[in-house]
Length: 516
Image (cartoon, rainbow, N blue to C red; front, side, top):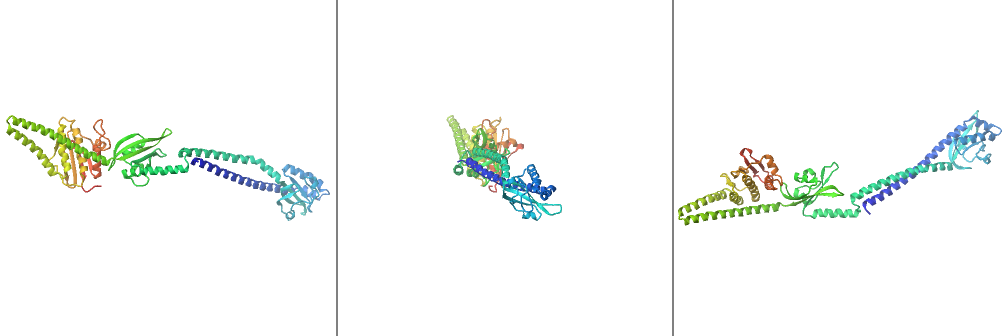
C-alpha cells in the first residue's frame, strides 16, 4: 500500500477512535450533568413544597390525604417530576401518585431529614429507581410535622437523555465526516507528492538515487524553487562539489558561479563552455517538467580542463607547423630568387641577398632564445611572427622582451601570450596598417605581458565581457581566448587590464610570489 493509503487509513482509525472516545466521555459527562441537574431540581421543589403552610396544616388535619393529595398532584404535574409524596412523622405515605401506595411505609431514608436538613439519594422505590430528595416539614410551633419527598425516575432521565442523543450523534458524525474529508484531501496531496509509492519503494528509490548521484562521472546540479519563487540548490553530487570547489553541506545559491546561476531559469543549453577559476567546464541544462509545469532545472558539468590544455598545446604545435610551412614557403621563394640571380650571373648580389635575409632571421632567433628562458614561449613568439607575416600583419617582439625562469607553468605562459597575440592579430587585420607589438618582461617580482595592435582597441567594459565564457568580439563566433587568459591570470592572482592611453593595448600582470 502506498504511503498516502497507509496515512489515510491511519488517520481514519485514529480520528474514529478519538471521536468515539470523545463521544463516550461526552455521554458520560452528560449523564452526570443530567443527574446533578435533576438532583438540584428535586431538592428545590422538595424544600419549596415543605415550606408551603398548607402542607404543614394538612399534615395536622384529621384527614391528611384528602387535604394534601390534590395539592401534591398539582405540584407534580406542574413541575414535571414523577412523584411528590407527603410522609407523616412516622414514615407513612399520606399522598402518592399511585393511590394504592397511600398508607404504606415510605421506601427510602428519612433519618437524615429528621435532623432538619434535606437529603438527596438515588433509591429504588415503588416507581423504580429514582433520584429523590426528602425535606422536613415543620409546623408553626417548630415541631416536625412530617416530610415531603420529590423525585424523578431514572427512566424519565434516560428518556430525556435518549431524546438528546441524535444531536450528540449528529455532532460526532459531522466531526467524523469533516475528518474523513480532510484525511482524503491530505492523502490525495501526499499521493501526488510521493507518486503513489509505498515506503519500501521510496526507500529503494532514495538508495538508488543516492548511489547513482555518487557513481556518475559528471557533475550534477538540480535547481528548484523556494516558496518565495527564488531559485535554490536542491541536489549537488560529489563530482559537482569537486569541480566547483564546494564544501560539504547545504549549498547556498549565491555561492555558485554567476554563469551557472543564470541557468536556474530553465533555459536549455547544450555543450556550452563555462569557465571557473581553475577549470573549463562543458555545461548542459534542461528544464524538468511535471504535469505541464516546470518544477526545476538539471545542470550537468563535464570537466574539459585537461582536454582544453591538450587542445591548447595542439594549437601551439599546429601554429608551429604553420610557421614552419610559412618559413618553408618563404625559404623556397628566397632560394628560387637566389638561384635565378646566380643563373643571371649576379653571384655577388645573390650572396648579399641571402646573407642579409639570414642575418635578420637569425638575429631574432638568437635574441629570443637568449633573452627568454622558457623554450616553449620563445618558440611560440617565433612562430607567431611568421604566422602574422603570412596573414599580412607585422608582428614585432620589442627589444625589452626578456624573461628568466619564473614559477609559472609553460602551459599557462603559452595560453596567456598565445591567446593575447591571436586576438591582437585578428584585431589588427581590420586596420589599414596592420601591426602588433609584443613585450614580455619581468619587472621586480611581477611578470608583465603587453600586447598592442593597430586595431580599434577594447574598452574596460568590453574587456570585462570578453573575460566571460563564450564571449567574442568576432562575429559568428563564441571565443574562449580572453576567457582562458583571464582564467590563467586569476589562477595566479594577477590582473588583466587595458591601457586606453596607449591605444589598443592589453596588459597582464602576474605576481611571481607563487600560485594561490
